[in-house]
Amino acid sequence: MSIFILEDDVIQAQSLKQSIEEICLAQHIPYDFIEATSRYEHIISKVPACTYLPIYFLDIEIKNEERKGLEVAQEIRKVDPHGIIVFVTTHSELASISYQYMVSALTFIEKDLSRPERLQKIEACLQHYVQKNKVEHKEDYFFVENVHTTVKVPFHTIEYIMTDEPHRLKLITTNQFIQLYGSLKEIEQIDSRLIRCHQSYVVNEQQIQGLDVAGQHVILKSGKQVPVSRRMMKKMKVRLKDR
Image: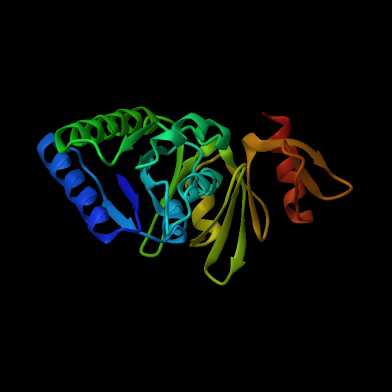
């Protein structure tokens, strides 16, 4: 599982990381990595590669910007609607306005709490994180893992996958764009619900609303259009008729 820490004070970042490591060791909580950084862009870039739902411990004040952590949480929600966000801060007074940012934070941990109290709150967050991942992992996921790429997204959110550059693909979901390495031939073999409709496109059958034969494209539930080649049109007609 993936644990992110956003903190611009190196000493505080390392202290929080150490506390998390101690709790995970004592409570036998597994994790893939603990990433401590002062650069929120670094966190955003790593989210698509997370195999499980991440947990984010975000300082609210970053580089003297009092509400930067709240804004970062909004950016995280654009690429990760379901991860767990925890604010670690000296600005507990901002708790009452955090709802305005609509980021669904789990809780606030005050930095000036005693060490035992702080550890207790961190542990409660991590245990919640474990339970949520157990539930989420039972759901239907699209999962790709190879030498260059690890991608895991809820299958129902996938709209289509297209070729982007040589040996690179672009996965388009209802809420994000993800670049990955591989070929469409490999992708369509992962799940029978992924249909090759064009030399450069694979579409999720569950997202198809209709087929425009004259315009040579499928219409998705979101209103987006995905091209269908002449060669693939007959197969698409049969496939959609049999749904």
